[in-house]
Amino acid sequence: MGLFNKIKNVFLKDKGAAKYEEGLTKTRKEFSTELAKLSKKYKNIDDDYFEELENILIMADIGVNTVVKFVDKLKKRVKEENIKDSETLKEIIIDELLIMYVNNGVLKSKINYSEEGPTVILFIGVNGVGKTTSIGKIANNLRKEGKKVIVAAADTFRAAAVEQLEVWANRANVQLVKRPEGTDPASVVFDAIKTTKQEDADVLIIDTAGRLHNKKYLMDELIKINKVIDKELPDVSKEVLMVLDATTGQNAILQVKAFKEAVNINGLVLTKLDGTSKGGAVIGIVSENNLPIKFIGVGEQLDDMQKFNSTDFVNSII
Image 1 (spheres, rainbow, N blue to C red):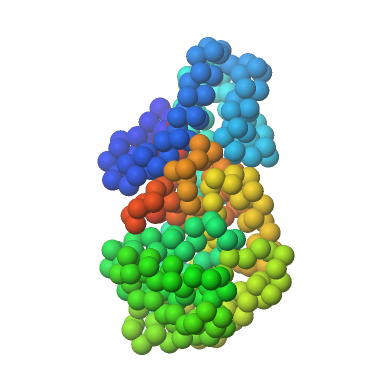
Image 2 (cartoon, helix red, strand yellow):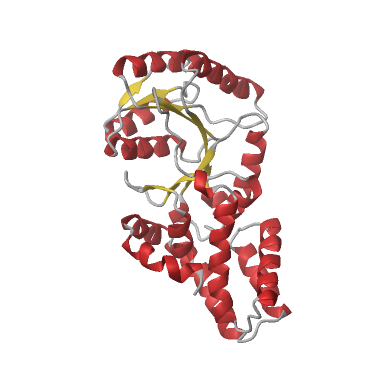
């Protein structure tokens, strides 16, 4: 019995799994349907089977490099375990997807909270990926877990950014620290840290301006913000999460690589997975960048931001 069957009962009992299944419907319909067609077409496993499997995985936006490595591992298992039929191989495909997550740091998908003092979560990313809405949803999740959350509106560059974040902070019922548009973002962070200490808050979430890696002044701004955090809260846990739009597929992988050159990223947040059939990009992003996914967005509602769970994810796309 494969790993898939061993975890199936656990998956079915997991309340969060229902959100995954609902939010990843488009990906599941395309990916699972194609795998089923493949199994029906090829009763026995041969080179033609693997060639078509590669095409299916690439069309799911998993990424060519990841697909090649993945299929090579499958071929090795087929030979070592003397697997003859495609239905058995389908179960092994699921096993290997889960193994890939574990090997690429999925066990670090949880937020690393400070043992003493607040935890700082700094959000970065390009414009239009859903960074502000993600902050609101994650703040809501943390508050529902019993944590006291402060949100800092340090995106003072984009027009109406503070107002948008204020709407989400109100929805999440968390305190917002804001200053007028055009204020130095680092000074907003300084004030937010002061408020966090005064309120004895558990988590400080910091929004930052959307930026491209080639905009030096914006990247310098991130460095300045980090210096303020390190000076005022030197001994606390700090997470730098990059928000990515899942509908952009392989472009998301390139964005991460570009930002990693300037910022020490701890994890990723994937948004809009409910709006794409290319949810396989998650697999490529994990494999190509060796970064854990912390949260995924599977809908537009306040509670549709889920902590990433590799088991739930794989079960929801197959």
